[in-house]
Image (tube, rainbow, N blue to C red; front, side, top):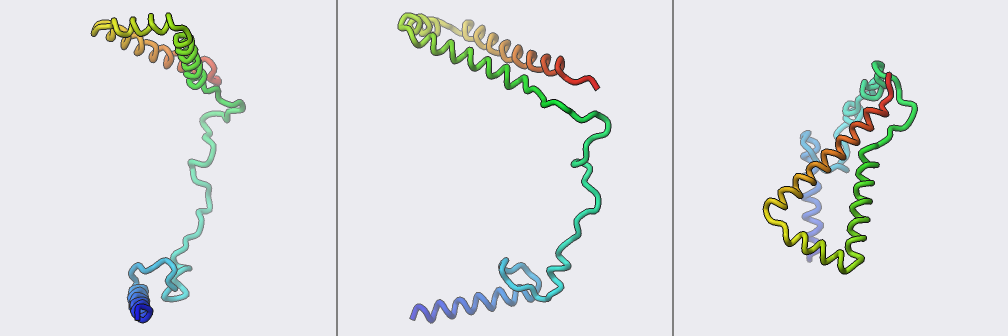
Length: 140
C-alpha cells in the first residue's frame, strides 16, 4: 500500500517539475532543457583580452627577489623572548613567588603603567617593522 502512495507522489512531483521547467521557471538542476538551444544561449564566450588585474603594472618594475616579511620576523622574536621569560619565571619557585607577589601588589596606577608599557611595546614593534621594510625596499 505504501509503495503505491510513493509511486503516486513521485509521479505528481515529476509532473510538477516538468510543468515548471516547460513554463520557464526554475526547476531541479537535473531537469532536461526545454529545447536544444537553451544551453547554447546560456553560455557566453570568454573575453579575448586578459583582464587588467592579471597584467603586471607598467609603472613599477617587477620584483626579482622575494619580499622580506619584517613584521613576522619581529613578532616571532617578541614571542620567543616572551616565552623564554615565562619559562624562566616558572622554573624556579622563588621567581614564581616574586612574580605573583608583584602582580598582586599592583593597584590601578600600576596597571595603567603596565598598559602604557604594553602599548609602547606594540608601537615599537610596528615602528621597527615599518622602518626595516622601508630600509630594505628596492629603489625603483
